[in-house]
Structures are given as structure tokens and as C-alpha cells.
Amino acid sequence: MEKSEITLISPTTKIIGNFEVKNELHFYGQLMGEIKGATGSVIHLKEGSLIEGKVNADTLVIEGFVKGDVHAHQKVWITGRGKLVGSIHTPSLQVDPGAVFEAKVGMT
Image 1 (cartoon, rainbow, N blue to C red):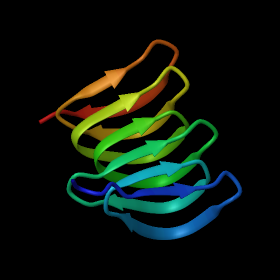
Image 2 (image 1 turned 45 degrees about the horizontal axis):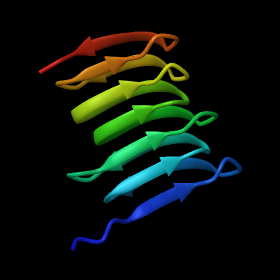
Image 3 (image 1 turned 60 degrees about the vertical axis):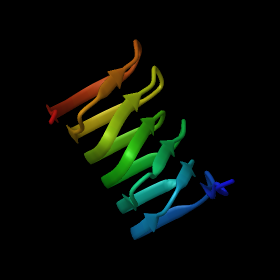
Image 4 (image 1 turned 45 degrees about the vertical axis):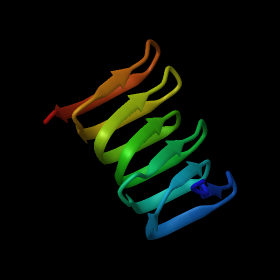
């Protein structure tokens, strides 16, 4: 059985810079910079989170606020509580009712 690794960034954490994630990330804090997800990564930007920069992942779930560029190799899902201002590049996009979505979209 393959072991799953989950990284948790708390609401009181503020990161200025870039970091990489190998598996799954639950992000509640603030970031000015870039998150790079490895192949197979799943990034959950939780309600209350704030990202100003770039996010790269296989799968990205946005429940917080992202201002910047988003790249996902599999899927981007913006929940009803999520907000995105920027651009999206992904083959699959789901935007739930209630989401705020102001972005240029490229789907390949």
C-alpha cells in the first residue's frame, strides 16, 4: 500500500517566496510567491487562504482567494466560496455557483 503524505499550512502562516509540494497540500495561510506541485500533487487552497503569485499542480481546488496564474495538469475546481483573479491553464475546469471568477482561461 502506498503511503499518502499531506502537508498542512496553518491560517497564521505567511510565506514570502516559493516552495514545492510532492503529494497533497492543505493551505490555509497567506503566500506571496509560488507553489510548485510535483507530478500527482493535489493542492487545496482552503477558505480564508490568500495566494498572490503562481500555483502549479496536477489538481487544484480553490476555496480561498488566488490573485495570479494557475496551471493544473489535470483539473482546476473553484468552489462556491473560491475566488480567482488572474489566468488559468488546465484541460478541465469546474466553477461552482457562488464562485468569483475573473480570469483568462486556456484549456488544452
